[in-house]
Image (tube, rainbow, N blue to C red):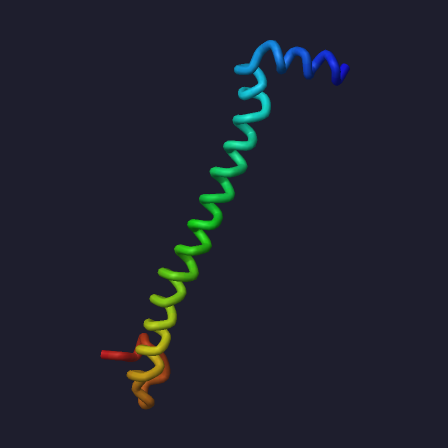
Length: 71
């Protein structure tokens, strides 16, 4: 059975690419997208969240119980 499949792949290279190449390409694309999403989170979202947290902490008015009480 394996010998017949190998012979089929050798005789039809486009069929081989369709069966083996597209899933590998899809895995590479998903991996690259995951890496880009993680980089976006680490280098864009987290610094913005940290800056917002620090600004709120530094300029927090002690007489207000919550930000909803601010004028």
